[in-house]
Image (cartoon, rainbow, N blue to C red; front, side, top):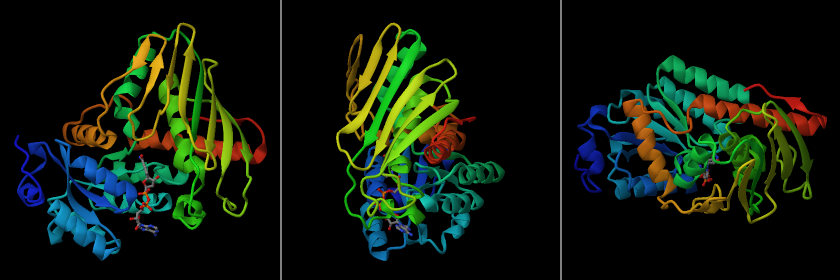
Length: 353
Ligand code: NAD
């Protein structure tokens, strides 16, 4: 199929439907990551930005011009339920602060549109469950923005692990962190973020531990350190170290922090070999090596690959190499709940995902 060039793409798409193989996406939340996703989608063969949901009219005007979006595909946070009457939008990508994800995703599902929601999918497991149920009841797909699940070097390591190249897996280390700036941003407001570094960046080590080890954890222990209780107020974790135990006896040792840079590293060790990746979860290129040599798969913008693949999942029922559905996101939320409980109690908390 020939993809018409921008800016008339949205108009051209309005006369098409799913069968023609392009997922028509409205972006909700035109902030920093929403902008990155939309830029990456310019190179996507299977997903296109055709609509927006925003509370800021000036941003809507810019996006309309940039992506050739017609007025009828522009919504705000009050009126977006009306998207149910818009046949020219297939899916909404929710890219707003974490605590808004649940309500917004459920409204999208009730409007009959597929939901792609950013990580963390919600602020706790109870919310995540509600989202899964709402999307199942509405008969729409719920996908979480786990872009690394489609990244080539990550998949190379996962495939090597599945092929037994590392032997029996024994240990995983995940280090995830950065120094957060502006103390007034929503990421440091518990009402909007639902937590601190763990929700934002620590989740990469949790999710990574699961796909690198290839098992689901059964217990967690965790310890919190807070050096700045003013910036990292009640409900906002600054630094948490945590250990996940897996059924085979593998232990994952992880660090989540908002007060150190240069922390984006995975290490997987087995009886026959190892993989180390640094950076392991940033926007890339993802770099690293295994006992067999360098990880040097070509870099493609993660969000471009993600959206091409998600179009295949939604439109063709394709199976992703590592799950990205709501139930996958829910597992990470169950683990985060358990980590917070382990911090509070100081004990070992059982996990059942
Ligand atoms: P951001 O602050 O840059 O953008 C958030 C957007 O939400 C803004 O446009 C803001 O106007 C809008 N918004 C709507 N209602 C709001 C409200 N009540 N308060 C504040 N803002 C409101 O944030 P971001 O970095 O784009 O993050 C958005 C989401 O994307 C988060 O859930 C984050 O975890 C996720 N994210 C994912 C990745 C990834 O690699 N997958 C990377 C960055 C962010």
